[in-house]
Image (cartoon, rainbow, N blue to C red; front, side, top):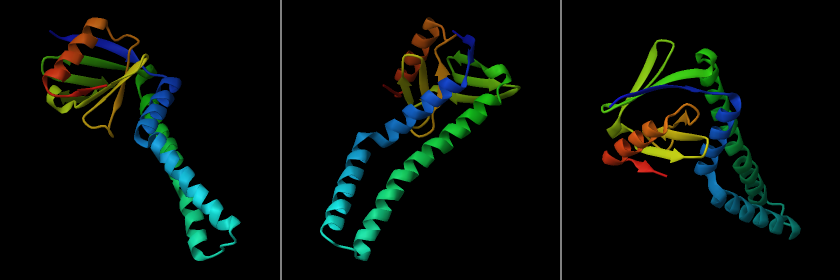
Length: 163
């Protein structure tokens, strides 16, 4: 059984996916740790400590706050560039017993089912990829329900993770 369909990307979809991937990587724990670091920094400064240690903690806090956000904007920018390179924001998807094929403007990327290790489902799109760090977006707009079932079954049969 083979399914061929076209999905459409837009900036809002790509930005939303980038934000969700970023949040999955960072999570609430990261901000709890940053809050504890800030509390230590404030306690040192209120206590009158102006040593290199207090300055180092402050620098660590600022970098800890800035770097993840910079990572988000870089990832978002790269994802937007890729989606804007699509002809009218559309890409063709082919699901077959061999795997998933993503094609645009004559270029194609193929993933056998055994290489698709992660599927993260959201109401408006799925994030799919070989690793939790390298995911691409499958918009559910234009993604037939029977093709979705086929993909989930194929990924499960080959040991992939579905969330």
